[in-house]
Image (cartoon, rainbow, N blue to C red; front, side, top):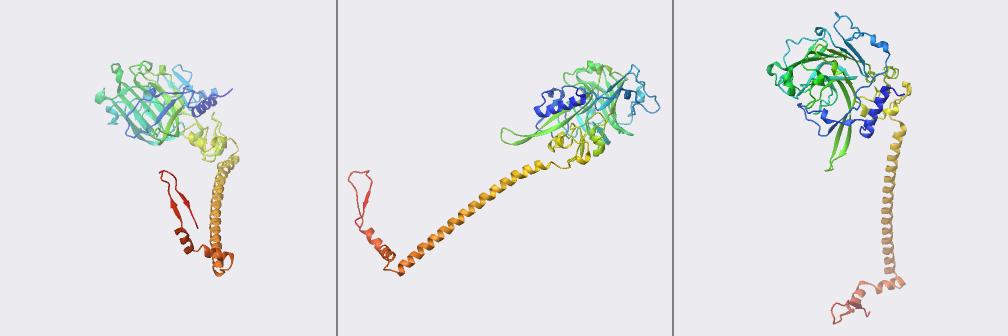
Length: 455
């Protein structure tokens, strides 16, 4: 029986091979956001059909204390408490605390001011630099794009459909900071080893009578993500998704670029975004005072050496590709390079000494053979042309030399047959013959001319 991870990988392979028969192109989830960048012209998004894939783990891990839950002064949460929901995803381990002492998790940003652009706009996003390198699905991230709609966009590739995938969403919804005036704002600040983003007193544009929302997302330097909900006047499942997607969780994707020729014959690049994983949280558990902690699990792309890669036991089938010196299970941001460099066929060995560091010789020699055959045929054709030209030149020279030699012989030996013929056909005799020629024409027009010589 295939493991959940293998099933996920198969689905992603289908995405690439047959344009995602198992998924769907769903741009309604990818709403347009304003950002001060020039967007590519041809981008499409392929959403994941199944939202969650579970990793095979030992149940004993569920009793392991979390390293990024509350500050040290608090006690480790009891996993048997009915207020705590624990889930184990492929990439992140989630812990939902429904009735928590929110002061243990909430980060006060008293002196911080709202961002000027984000604090008076709707469907607007601004890119900010992180004070540390943050690992998102194992990928290093140094910049995040903060949106008024209650989420962070994590990819360096900016496009208009930010809500479709590659997000960290404490509460993605149709928020705006215009309705609340000066009281509504989006604030972000570094606090110790944390990067905190707060949506303060924001309204739902199409449900502004429900009241103001206040919540935070906290990115820890160790890769953990914390959602803290201080004020939710409306339950998440009652928020309208007519004009904006409503999501709580994480999502990641990879890109695949292809070239095509448009109707004008111009070569262009098409980029397709394939969503390969989501962490979907139960929205019925999200209410005021709820805290969600997402702790990252090990991924293949975090290994930088072959031995640690092929010997890892983390629930993924990690393989090392010596051509690009990268560890992967073939599904991450660099999937296209993994496929283009032939890593699918070069990374099967568990013995690092047997893993090639360059493309197979057979492929190279095959290409070289084709090139050699082509060059040889071109050289042979060129040589044949030169030989023909030389032969023609030699023939003409021999002919001219032969005629010249014969004429010299005939001229110096007038009593020979050659000499007599030359005398009879010398230019003065030929002129006399032409003078004796007669021409005539019939009276009826249109007949052909006939020539008769009496010589």
